[in-house]
Image (cartoon, rainbow over all chains, first blue to last red; front, side, top):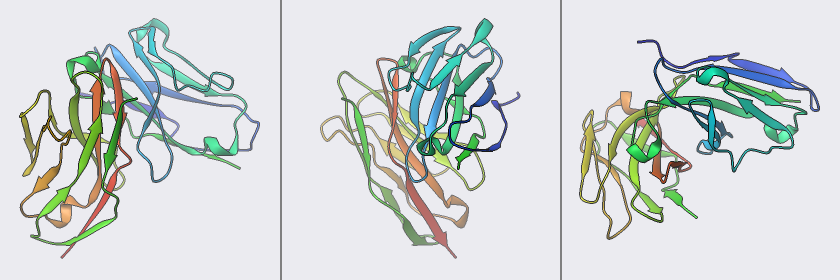
Length: 116
Length: 110
């Protein structure tokens, strides 16, 4: 089966510019996650969708970050405007069920963002 | 709030040495516990998991036991190989939240 797809793989932008990342989860997976992984740290959950509804976005900086999952399939994460501290790898993951079911998350390759 | 603490790395071992990576957690409720691994140039992937106290997860020679009394989920392997060089992340899920530890980098030298 195809894995989680993400694009682009790399992105370099100037601060105050905007950027968007795309994720296509594994077919049939209801739950989709966006994580931010700063170098040397573990992934930090930004937002979690169940189908096209938001389950948790408590750590999403909503003044600059937004995400949507139209039709409950693929998803887009946007940053506008970007700051230097947004430099990180943005990971998308999907799972069949919610974490409460101890379901395995499948991760995409990530998008490495550099903000200059 | 819920949290995961891992031993700091990097850890460097010779091939065939024993490995233990410590992981402790703080959580309300009864979390499920995971070890994910990130090999160089690859994405994170599940290594093993345990869903209740005293469960043992195992895969690829790695083991971890869910210890509720010590709130721990230490990762162990009796004989590491060069191919085990990677970053290992302990994680918990509780009430539909997933929290990762900071990761422990392991380098195995021949």
